[in-house]
Image (cartoon, rainbow, N blue to C red):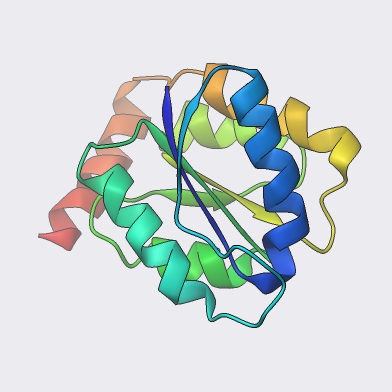
Length: 146
């Protein structure tokens, strides 16, 4: 899979681990930065990473900032993106099942290295429950975006 990856300075250390994890699992990674601990504004890296997913040029995205909330808000401004902040693997599963989320957002401040692989794997392997109620809700969002 091709993964669009981005962080701000507060997510840099976790992003470094995530990038290695993705490489180890043979995923192709498009890294939008940042590349060090120097301060950067999360929209500057998160929005271009989300656009790659929205354009269909990446299968999924992973965005990381300190709390995760900033990246989640920024990514969800991009038409066609359904970014979800996940603190546990169960969150990743349910957002894929019910929301067909296409971007996983992580908190650099609170996501432990010991949990991140399980969260990523759950997000990548879970499938959307294409039931009428879930599809209906997503259609309402897509219609609003138009």
